[in-house]
Image (cartoon, rainbow, N blue to C red; front, top):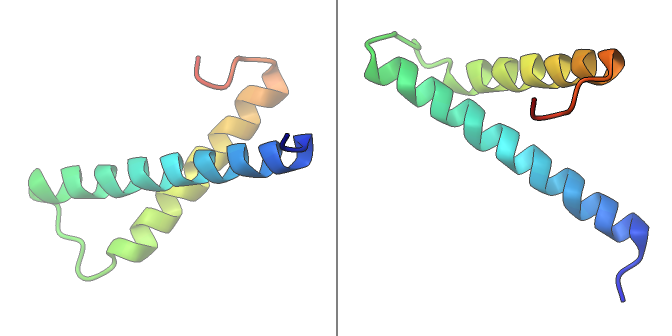
Amino acid sequence: MASSSSLSITNALRKQNRIRKEAEATVQLGKTLGLEMNGLEAEIVDRVIQMEIEDMERRKAKGVAPDA
């Protein structure tokens, strides 16, 4: 049986992967819509991830459900 700490790590990794995939999809959508990334795709993905994490922290502080 898996320990609760290993389940927490697994859940955190899944969440990180989901956030990264969403950020990459956001950048791809921008490119599809004609936005120029000028070779800064990785930095833009990182910034989108940072903004998503900040938004999740704000929602948590307000007591709002994570995916509400």
